[in-house]
Length: 153
Image 1: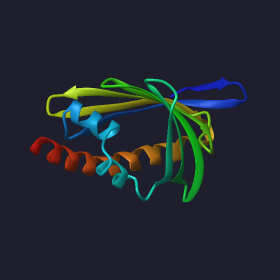
Image 2 (image 1 turned 45 degrees about the horizontal axis):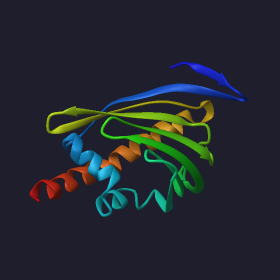
Image 3 (image 1 turned 60 degrees about the vertical axis):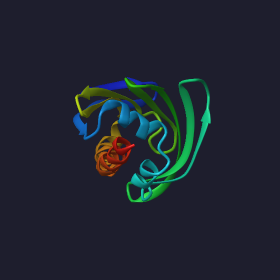
Image 4 (image 1 turned 60 degrees about the horizontal axis):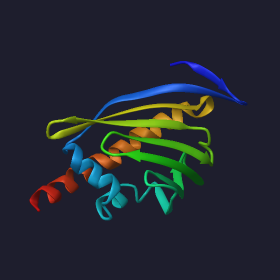
């Protein structure tokens, strides 16, 4: 991990590698982009008032409230999604403003790997790691349940 000075913020480079979902790549992307049942349930205790505005074919602007660090806070983020390869996520407003992440998805047969690379304000590094781990724990059983239903069809 290295520190960078970008503008007035000191940012830390981080990686979170080795996550694996028990579903093929196409099913994981269907869960991310189109599912209106399992994915929202995965984050019902950590995300609310979610609204999305389409900026282009691949880029969205989202606003919501997230539960981080023991409290609800408002945030605005821009995500550029290039299925089935990657999502580039930038937090624009809120306590994590300045955070930039690239999430890479790798096919592994009947499973999908996910690796995250990013920059985050130094003072938020520990909380960001906890949030990423919590998000993965929330998604993992829901991706598995979604895949079982998806593969039955």
